[in-house]
Image 1 (cartoon, helix red, strand yellow):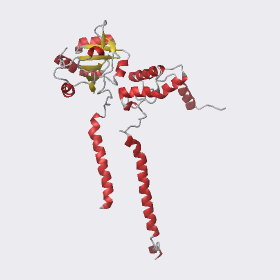
Image 2 (tube, chains in turn orange, brown; image 1 turned 180 degrees about the horizontal axis):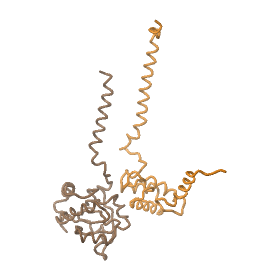
Image 3 (cartoon, helix red, strand yellow; image 1 turned 120 degrees about the vertical axis):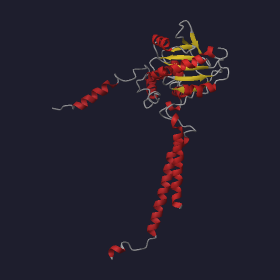
Image 4 (cartoon, helix red, strand yellow; image 1 turned 135 degrees about the vertical axis):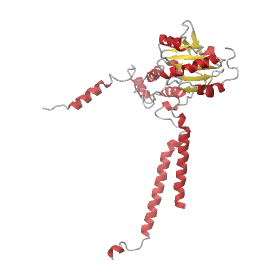
Amino acid sequence: MYRTPVWLAALIVMFALRAAYGIDPTSIADPVLEARYLALTHELRCMQCQNETIADSPVGLAADLRREVRDMLLAGKSDDEVRNYMVSRYGEFILFRPRFSRRNAWLWFAPPVLILLGLAVAVRVVRQRAALVATDHEVPDQDVLR
Amino acid sequence: MNRFLVPLALFALLVVVLAIGIRHSPDKGTIASPLVGRAAPGFALPSLTDAQHLVRSEDLKGHWYVFNVWGTWCVECRAEHAMLVEAGHAGLVPIIGLDWKDEDDHALDWLAQLGNPYQAIAVDHDGRTAVDWGVYGAPETFLVNAQGVIVYKLVGPLTRESWTREFVPRLPRRAAAGF
């Protein structure tokens, strides 16, 4: 007889209950708004517990910020208007996905620049080695043969 | 000689970058508020001590004031309270309180026990005004000038050091005039 392993059953129960015991009980009737609400609350930082999003954090401030997001969406505000409001109150730090700005431009450009630099160095080294081999006319392993 | 030049330059660059990081490390814990230098958000909230009246930001226009966010559930607020009382007694500048997500009777008990340094206390039960002010953890203390612009924000308990170093020097000579 086929038996479901206990751990699998536990996992299934856990995921089934996940929604019921979630941090955020908010539901919005309009599924489009609901999706935007979920996306936004998952990209805003809970300022009190800095490594969690406001969707995942149980503290009071996160609940207040979620309420703010919901109210602004219900009032017809765009995603960017919500983000801008949050940034105007709490600074860029509240965004988990940092926006491109003149101040952080070097952070965005540093990785490709470093990769190109690394490639240039690698190509040079390989070429130098190749040139060395090409000009090496000595018979290899003379010592061994002798 | 030449083969050491590039690694040495890279090392020097790294030293500079790390030195800048270390120099800035004391402010790493607190997050600079984008509201400093901007107009203080408006509010009109019920008064804790006088149920008949609202505490309104409009009524504070034209005066410098200190805006202190606190709550009886906040341990650090208890630590800073004596300093607030002292600053209130000095009378340099009126202190306005924002009782954040608190129970009114707890707050009144607290004031009866520890003293009341506040000119007026606005009650923010649902925390909307605190979000508007970019508050993320009590206590937080703002200094607002006569034009209604936030000139300084302190996160964490007010100490004698921060009061004399950050608040008092920013005040005009006669900030208390008119009060």
